[in-house]
Amino acid sequence: MRILVVEDERRMAELLRRGLTEEGHQVSVARTGTEGLELALASPFDVIVLDVMLPQMDGLTVTRRLREKRNQTPVLMLTARDGASDIVAGLDCGADDYLTKPFAFDIFLARLRAVSRRGAIPRPAVLEVADVRLEPGARRVTRGGVEIPLTPREYSLLELLMRNTGRVISRDSILESVWGHGSDVHENTIEAFVRLLRLKVDTREPKLIHTVRGIGYMLREPDQVREH
Image 1: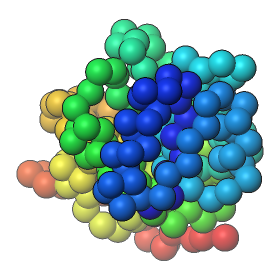
Image 2: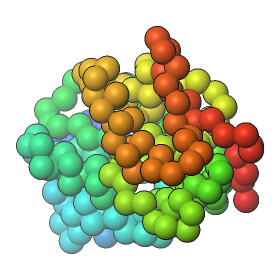
Image 3: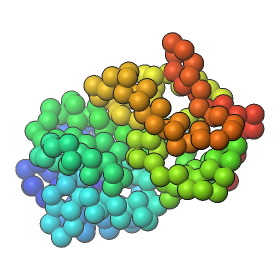
Image 4: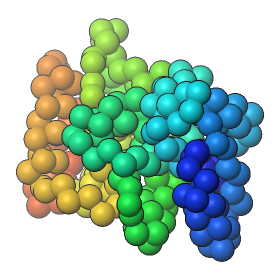
């Protein structure tokens, strides 16, 4: 994989560069947020490893700018801050996963593999099922022309279901795709998110989100998903 590491702490940056290179990856390193943003916009990368506390431009701003530019390269965010509000801020700005320092290198590699798999999914400009329209580039969802405000997790869950219209998605697959490898999310948390998503999306007929008992969930509608 081509990996961009944006880290201003020289020792950490060198450890990541050396370790990833030994794993067979092609690694570029940026020392500031501004440099990292420029590199990310100028060249294609499979994954961006991004520290939060950076000179010139912090990691949250870098991620937000990337998403505004419709750059959907997966971002694994690194930080010494482990508070719930810090994690929420990182995910809300568009990061795909969040890893707190210090961390074991094998855990880091596992998280990296998980976010890279998400990035390999084809991303058409628009997904449509019935009167629900999802625009991946803008992360915008509407039903019947009315915009539906979704949290990042709700959006990721809906996108996963829409990309697999007519197919049952197991709870394990939902956990891997929406929360990432190694997450200790319980089954009732997934159920709660599905319930919240239904309250926002399935407020009118036809009802699209269905439970398949003992397996998982599916988005079902007579028309096939259309890609433009």
